[in-house]
Length: 291
Length: 309
View 1 (cartoon, rainbow over the protein chains, first blue to last red):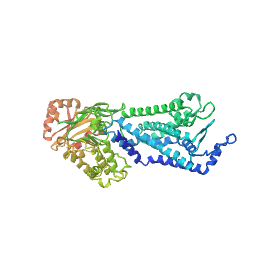
View 2 (tube, each protein chain N blue to C red; view 1 turned 90 degrees about the vertical axis):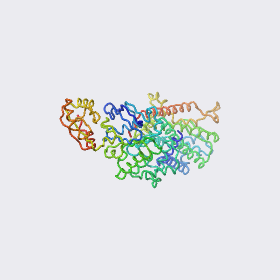
View 3 (cartoon, chains in turn cyan, red; view 1 turned 30 degrees about the vertical axis):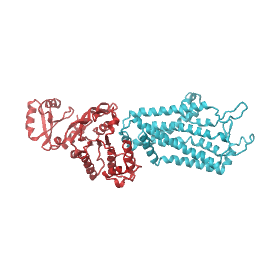
View 4 (tube, rainbow over the protein chains, first blue to last red; view 1 turned 60 degrees about the horizontal axis):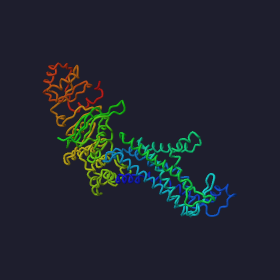
């Protein structure tokens, strides 16, 4: 198994396509950081327009923590496409090249091969998120410095002490890793049905877009299925930045307002990931390899 | 002689309509270069893919090295190498990297020097560090063979290995097959739609058409130039075949399919008058007894689609 995973990772990181995702993330983060560095004040003025008359804000609001949060909001919607580029190609790409038949005549079971490929796709996903974290969090901390984190939510504001932020990002990135692994498992599953990469990549994105629309639609009939859609829970990382308050309305440092929501979202994502993988194995074990 | 491959009643249906392989039985003995002959679409590749467990049979049994394939796949595949149809490899990797990957996947630990030596055997040592995407079809085919041989297999399955090759490439593959068999004692199953290709390397062969076995036998006997193939037309071919199979002529009957318009036999030309006489004595209404020049004529005739009712 170890050598199979090694081989799969070797193949992934020898392909030029792999680095598109890393390049795209670096370019997007670089542009946002550049824009905020040059004209961050205008962005803040626009963001705080309604609050400026009622709230006096002291300190460095546009710091590395806030910039990272802004970037995660923007990027985590698009990262699934970059994940799909590789995960949805894991089996269909091999079928397209004709190498799938060579892999399947080696002394490993189909399930072992799939597991090795899935582990490799998951490692790629995690590395992409580590790359995202390095650039978006550490890069922004270096460029913009650190301070307390001021977040403007839909109907309230959250103020997190500087010392109470970093661990939340670790939790948020960990959660995002789980969400992106679910995306990878969906792409991986769809990859079994095709003999070229384009179909599963487009299909993965279509499923995510379709479910995301269902998750965000405020039509009562869809409320029944929303809790079961993995897309509903993919933004669960934001929960790490909501803090509990005591009876005096003071923030409790080190707390999360709704940890149960995070756990529930993680369970739904995990069950989806396992479900997609098991379905992949069931389909693939019976599949005639004609490519 | 021990069988390396034993196939019994192998059948593969794709959906309800199409039967690619139909009740096929054959055996490949240790040390054979076994020719698997049939026109395009005859069921050769489907059969080879079933032997490699890439396709699940609808019915039938496959034993390789005396073990049922379905229950012993991993153990069997450790001793098998294959090139399946057009050569497939990672075009963004070099020849050396491809070989290294398939060496690792075969559970074989080989040094760089050993892998380069194997590339040298197939004439690719000087291109070891070049991306496979820049290779010609012949070079890819040679690399595919090196990849199939990387685990030093006892059994090698080559599905149309000379497809797309120039005459020199075809000759190289032919020599390689002979070398593997004669010098290294490997068992080789090689498929082709060209009789002339099989004729030059095979020790035994099978001819299949529309998924059915037509002939299986020793190449020396089948290609015996002192014998000729005879196409016999009778009033009732089914009955005539049954009578012939019960007679002393049974061994000379090549194909016994009721759907054929002719019965094919292989025998020395001097026995033709005797055969004719015996047919009449058996009460068979003979319409014609037509000698053919070679097994190739016979192969072309028997696999020609117009021959079927």
